[in-house]
Length: 112
Image (cartoon, rainbow, N blue to C red; front, side, top):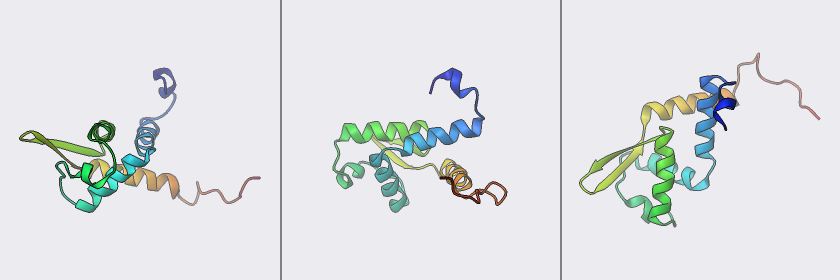
């Protein structure tokens, strides 16, 4: 989305769109699921768990890190990744609010 178009929306709407865009690839969903299952930082085992090249996983991790859903720390020559707990909870709550609106916002009629 161009810079001029994002200005027409709230910061919350833009942030939600960024998270949704990052979640829109099945490899990123699989990476997030793996990190959530591990419940700790993962150094290198993501490649062993997914049938993807290291470079591909690195690109997907970069996107997830850019939107703040994961964080990485350097340990020696390896980068260890884990879920960013605060941002994850914020994203989860925002997505829940979108899909489970308050009763006043909940559509009562189905169109078409």
